Image (cartoon, rainbow, N blue to C red; front, top):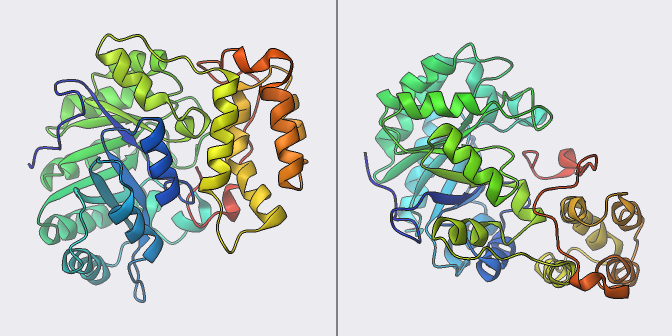
Length: 354
């Protein structure tokens, strides 16, 4: 197995950005570079099928993220000839990737119905073929992100054996089934089982909501590191905070005023020539659905934000809830406020739910 790039702080657990469609884009990676990038980055997935090409916006995120961190290119698909062709295309383009990652966990129905992403977990024999194909095609690091099963853990141990058989270099395990999506509690005991069985490093994924939760998960599972997705949308400082925790430094505690600045950065990061006016504001709401989980216990920010139609509306709402009347100095909670729900409109994104 090929060793992974060293963490930013050698000897400490890895932190990794979970791949999220419509989120882990070039602008968001750059934004995390400003707030504190993780040790490892993972891209949105390249779709692999008979007519697929390397999507330009994902190539851009690989080549121009400017964080100084290694980035892994994620693939989703099950056609062996097209997988081989896509890996060859990445190598021919000399993309500066640290490795190739296979998506075996996407819980979006429109994805798993095609027997890709989380849908692969229903057929260990197909998993065997795909892993074998990728291990033979990838000259460098080959990694996998998966869940514990499709609708139960029936094939979990068998698929772990296949991870070993094909000498996967890193396993990122989201400890829910595909059908549980993001609704259930995370079954961290499966991560511990994977750590005990696998010879490759295992990253723990699923509801890593704060540095305290991250440390608890590491203690509970003995994982080699943490992969964080939706929580870094709410709290972009979370990777920095983990590094500070691991090194024994004082952990940065953002205030609502810092969150107001982050919202402005998000507005800039999500600006595109083809996304104007209310369309841009509606796209922003996907991010603010998570940010709002830490603003007020009664959910008034979420209520007001979801009704914004213009940037002026949104600016006024953010100012009122985040900086006016001394709110700028109020601490931003470490954990999401219980009882609030993000409600992202995942089915309208380009692929997998966040």
